[in-house]
Image 1 (tube, rainbow, N blue to C red):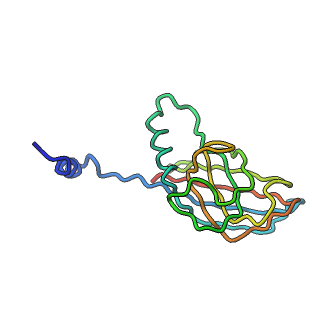
Image 2: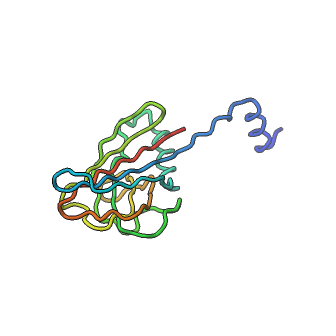
Image 3: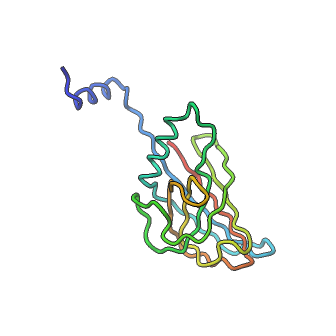
Length: 164
């Protein structure tokens, strides 16, 4: 009888487990004034959280009955703590909005949320994507250089989640 480690090794050698799925995300945030004129832009990569990976695994497991991808809520914050896989929330969340979800070929899911004038005002330094509009599971988080969003500014945030 084979031991579990030997069984895994034998299956890997038989090419049954030779594919690795990687989850990656990129973020962009573009700030515009009340007239729609470009003010500034930041972009970067995020850290996929441990609870986000678990959420995705549960979602894929239940795909037979699941009909809606709920990771569509984008949060903004002013926290300065670096992102980490163990994060479950933004450091200092100030606003969250429902994003528009689209699928692009190549395993890319895009979520875009617009924070209109009067919403999410402050020096924005962190972004996260969530499964609920008020609590929920955080899939990923990024910290960037501060964007000073004034009361009359609009901020469009876009995240690409790539399965590769």
